[in-house]
Length: 359
Image (cartoon, rainbow, N blue to C red; front, top):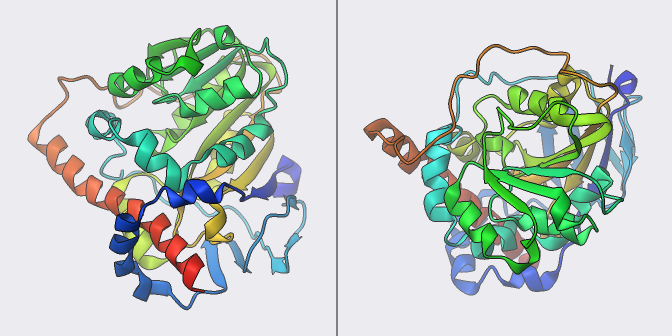
């Protein structure tokens, strides 16, 4: 079935060493507590449902699911079918209220702490290439755009700021975006990824980076992407990938949604997208290792074949857009516990950098 869908995977792993240095010696020291867990892993093994591989390092593009086993840098890839994890039990910050308050505070240091270890400029360029931002006059919406880091990449790709809409549910993130000179001319607005305030068939490109992990219903968000894109237009979703290392899996599932590659493909194809492709991204010092998962691990694209609504019709959404009024004792407890899982993932890239230096 993967061949019939026309699904492809490619990899892009290059970022600046100078950006890695921004992790800082104090953070490196904190990450030493993770060394014992998997120091001997010169060759890492990982799996995504039924997708399995063992590889040292991989930057070569092109792995197709047309037949079993594309070969990449000596690695053998096998796909025996889609393997879905139940999504009914949501992660602690995979809720709009918790995500609202999580970014209330993370927005203060987001560009200085999150991006150097998880989402760099080079990774952003690699992730946006499949979106084919080839014309300055494309109508583009960046959903869950936060502080505007991905939106800056869209501008850098050549799209005129006046043709771009940056939307996020967090006013605190958007405040940071409005202060950036590179986003002058961009329309910046609050909104809900699961209920987009745009007409059907109105956008040439849909981009969403680092947002799907907080959607209570990711399938609904992808269906909304399909709805607003014009026929022939492309939707691009950039997000996490699920870990297979047991300790990392525990903290990932405590924090937020880390989808498998199969889940991304399933959501896109159910919505009606065709020519679905996955481009793998990651920091260079990971050397292709994905067993710990990645906060920004893949860029998934699909093309809308015809005008109209998505093939999959869903009922009413379960959660409304969050506001400052959405805070209860349960919300606060979920926020605190979920943030512990998030803290682990601030240490993982530092640990991986130390492993790169020592092995």
